[in-house]
Length: 305
View 1 (tube, rainbow, N blue to C red):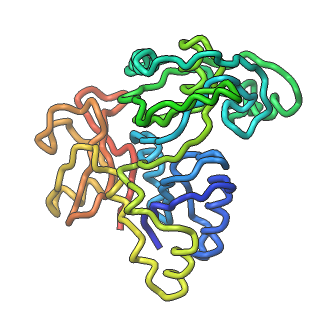
View 2 (tube, rainbow, N blue to C red):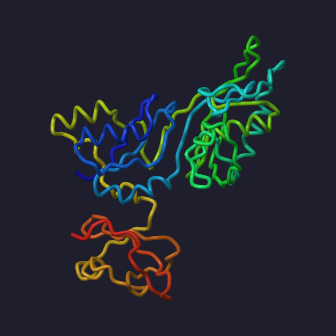
View 3 (cartoon, rainbow, N blue to C red):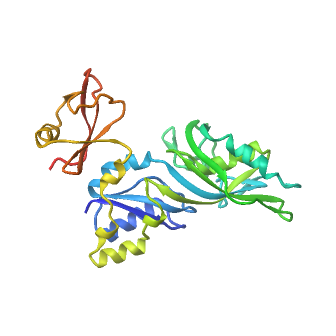
């Protein structure tokens, strides 16, 4: 069994929980997810099966789109609604939405983030959440993240009892972006403690909710012998790469993993890897040779049968 299943991850489960269940349902160990979603977050989680696990990294690198909610007035240790409150800044007056929009626009482009203490990032061989659970502090590495769009999608709601203000948002971002941290940092620029009070991922790897299936759907399709109905080919993960279709003679050399001159396929620009297709199947990706000038080599073999 080979392919990509765009799973709709439910809340209350980790991404690893989903992989564990799918290994049992599909009766195969070769299952991998394309990017962690926190237990409190639901949404699109592409799952790679069999040979398609070779393209997991390319799905991880893809743009993601999230919809969610930001709440001003207090922050939490986990930066979302599940954590204990660590700071309160009650709002006596509602912040104008024009100000909110202006602050959010400042985050578009390349930004720097410090990952949350409750995250899987490793520092000195330990994950940050291990430090957090042990009550220890450690210097967190600053990371760059790319924000393509970030906008308010609803009117903001001011709660004059709780002294909070909330609004819905949508963000399109690159690999490794912590949306929780984006919410907290937005609050900081507004002069208030904040947290991400809701989040759903609506796009990952080019898949959307309309493409997605639940664990229950997968189980039913597998039982009925129709699992192919929800499997997308591994080529789906390669749509952003330049594609070259090769001849039978060229395939003989590609299949053997040959180092080739960089003009072998008639292509000049090798700044990015190129997907090599034979008979409409992706067989490998070629890229610049790290040591030999004007040469290319396979950097990822997908099929050689």
